[in-house]
Length: 208
Image (cartoon, rainbow, N blue to C red; front, side):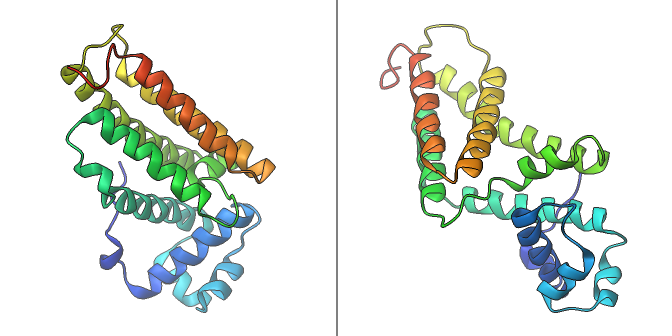
């Protein structure tokens, strides 16, 4: 498992390179992004680049960690984490995601999803990094659902891990459609479907 540093621990020069690589790879993909473009965007020399990274693939792995750490920090600081009820916490997460996507000017998708589609068959290290991060995201949802099963009466003995995997699939598929259509409504609508599905798993989400 890769070890990532908090943003505050990353040297300024390296952070600028990672910010530049992340932005460019979100906009135009990994293959179309060059080391020269990353240096130009970061306003740094190639010497600075190769001081921290041996190759474009290495900064691609670093950009994934950088992107994921920023997302994790943002989600970790959100108010829904304070909700004691796991179902309310999960609904708060869904609302938070919907609000973030609706508030953006352009649908760019998710860096892990974008690079998975582009590089899964050609760059095993990046594929492994994406898989690790998707697994961690699914684990967060799985944890909420397992907690909900202990607090609420379920209609059926569902598998929290399987439902969490469904959520990741729904999110990535929805972002793909939202990106190609440049229409955020598909993601918001599908998040609503997932909310209804989870609620339907329980006899009464408001009562233990």
